[in-house]
Amino acid sequence: MAGYNKVLLLGNLTRDPQLSYTPNQLAVVDFGVATNRRWTGQDGSQREETCFVDCRAFGRTAENINKFFKKGKPIFIEGRLTYDAWTAQDGSKKSKLRVTVENFQFLPGTGGPGGGPGAEAPEQGFDEAGPPPRGPGNESVPDSEIPF
Image (tube, rainbow, N blue to C red; front, side, top):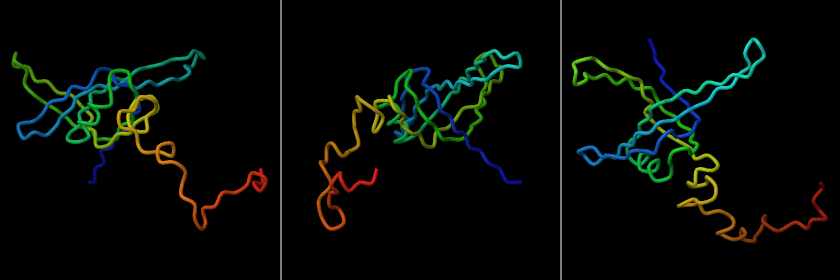
């Protein structure tokens, strides 16, 4: 039987990312994300629930999340569910599901590339590069010729 494991989350960080490195110097970042769901109950009242999710990212993705995100910032995550199991110091067995981040996107207000004001490494845009070069097929059109 085939399997499919894909998670998409849009939420806010619940704590600052915690960056560490494996013995092989691979970056690992752990952080939490809260997602909200709003709906109208059968009695017509507005309801809301919050889901808290632990997340982990590796490599360059981990370094970028650590650099550009902090508690409260919005993030869009694409990843997979990972099951962790261990034995606690008292001998009890523990387990939890976590999202292993495979990709993420900046959202407005994150302060990251393309994410709004205060970006530490903004993508080069029109303002920095100046207007596009003039040439065949790229001439300016007078306002009087625009049909709307």
